[in-house]
Length: 472
Image 1 (cartoon, rainbow, N blue to C red):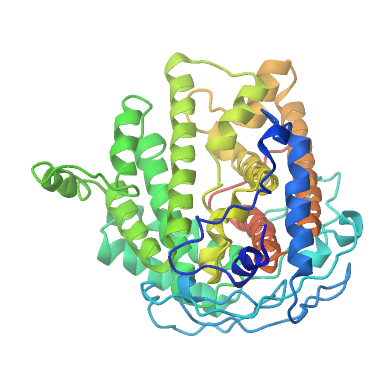
Image 2 (cartoon, helix red, strand yellow; image 1 turned 45 degrees about the vertical axis):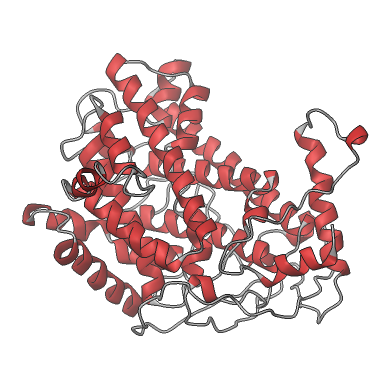
């Protein structure tokens, strides 16, 4: 691997993506194994880190374990134009002020000096504190929680109350988009839309977003995904019957149909036929204009994963199948929140290069994050889901049904499964940051961790939607 290749990674995207760069060391054909075990992939990451360290350029300060994270200002520019040579872990607290509309990427990012990344302490010493994540809460093990309290025993990191001015600005803007721009819902759904608290949710999950317009990228996609879930799958007219066809047609709003001129107008007209497709199309149009091609394609891939998970759950519903616990967890690895934290770099105004996103270690970290945060949803929405007709599958219910334990025992065991996944996510995030201390990679890891914390905060405090069972 050449030094110019590493310099290209460290200075970030070029406006045309970075898909042409190969990070894997080119081993001689005779030495290349036919198939590598997961453990054999670590040297590739270590080699990348070693070469990144060898690049001669001004050093970037890396905080010691437990040291305070330096605050740096975030540039108010589009995602494709944002430079990425900032401090390793920026911790941005921005005032809530209107920002110019995020422009479409059209100008390549200028070349920047490539920083030298010094060696880091071991993963155990590095920990999540060095990523700028608050210490975990000491959750009580007993006593009935009050309204708005976290689940007793659930491993999580508390966060500060999101900036109320920014929450209000985002809430007004996302509602105007939903009502005036795409006619997402009828008047009788307004109370539920307001109760979802999209503004508070997104501000909590993306504290480093440079502007309200950057936050709107995430907010539109979140609202659109919920419209598809509610209208196609669940509460508001959804059904497992025929779901595959509906999801496929909606997915073409994210991943456009390329067809002949004769049939293109019919497809184009279909994108306005219902609220889910209108919301997908509009949200994706905004996202594509603000992201790089690599980031947009990453999101499409994650949404295809999500839709595949929806279809598995629908198939089980149609046949009254109760999956084994491992089968349920496999489904939830696809039907989960993964598309949300993986756009954290676009919302933050920078890019994690495609080659770093595709590293097996990064893919495992992202999967663990998505799995853990989705079980948070299972746990907080447990009471709400049990009020719906039929047997609603969630992790506590599946554990109870398959392992022959009470609903309470199933719920408390699910808390333990979540905690194990969270500990694995944090340990492997720290290990990856040590093995490959590229600034954008470390910032992305921190962004995913902060998204998980914000997601938990929103579930915990959204008493309009969620109440906890009486299990303590």
